[in-house]
Length: 574
Image 1 (spheres, one colour):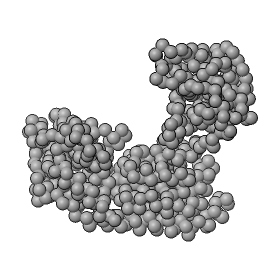
Image 2: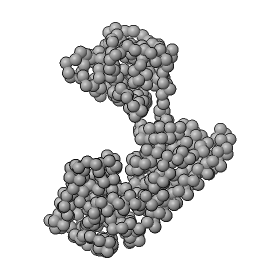
Image 3: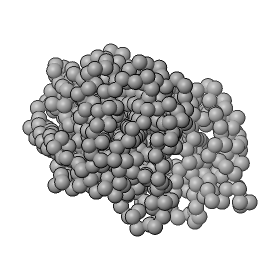
């Protein structure tokens, strides 16, 4: 029987799956649920050592003898017990030994409150561990997922790019001594595969799953020019799109334009027929909350994250494999397997699900085609949506005049409109998704090249970053489309927030500011639009006018009308 503490059971199950076979355990009451569990596991041998400083070196010696990537843990109770491990941990760090340090802890609310055996433990071992995590005590599924992910991250990191010790801190609330759980949970183990050079054996597990899938999907997040190292990227993705559903947003620097999957997801809801059974995730952030929510429900899907650093990013909450590789190299090897069928184990599996895969892809692409047609034919009334649609349409006509124009979109509503209408890669500060700095980022790009740089930005983001225009280096290649509806319009889209009387003034920062004075003081040529005709003429002016100074078109709209038009766009998909 095991402890009734869920974080302890998650930890124990994953220690076994990641190959921990020896545990040096020190006395104490707070760590007794952990020690009890370790002793209950037939695959883990426990060794009692009373002196924690000595225990650390005992574990070090075992790890030196074992030579396994990660086979030895040392477990201590809360308080100064952890500090006594520091000499052994420092030695393990410089000898590149993947010692797993497990410390029990008091609940975080009792740290520094003069309660017994409490001190800030999560960072106590400092730079001598390559990863330190403190587990939650789960109260819901999301916290359980978080606990699982943290343990996987720590144990994977102990043998990543050379071996190093790691620290797993486990807060445990009283009562401590309930050992009534019959068996450990079957916890999801995340694996990391390494594949570089010409040898692609490591990739074959992923490739076999992908080729044998009935419902394969490739999701491409934000990418930049250094993301892939081949000019054949477009050809690779076009080839794979015949065998899998490929989804990307306009933030993908190697896309052929926005793929309207957000609209499809709005239409289909939770239809399981569209759920993938294998997902290859490439790149960084995804804007669409609908896609993240949809794929988090695909609990039976095998999710692979392909990235060169081997980073653990589990945004879909179903990650099972990290493939540390060049994504282009991995995808080219999938094509190679398709074309040559050189892997005998793959050949048999390749034919069996082909009909199902074809049906799945056709189902998705039919929906995507309908959504694309809807975006093209829907005629929004005068609004921010109408402005972005007209800008992107005219941009596609006029950008051929310039060899390589760049378009930056700010966060919130602006980037969401880009994902509907942009048929080219766009730049956006999506790393953290903040509203600050979007104007400065675009301005910075404009001063180091002679190409046109456009910035499509909302009012709060613009006024927050107005000092970007207070710069003597700006020239006429910098063009700004300012969407001003007098507030943070994105807050109108959040269901339930309309019930708060604080929404407009305090949450959405309602205002009556315009950019005219800011442009005047900074030498920016200003123009405004207050109706459809003025907006369209202003965008033509923004795209076609030659100027030695930056140009700014301010499109003034009504926030409630912007909300109505945006929602009508989605409602009319039905």
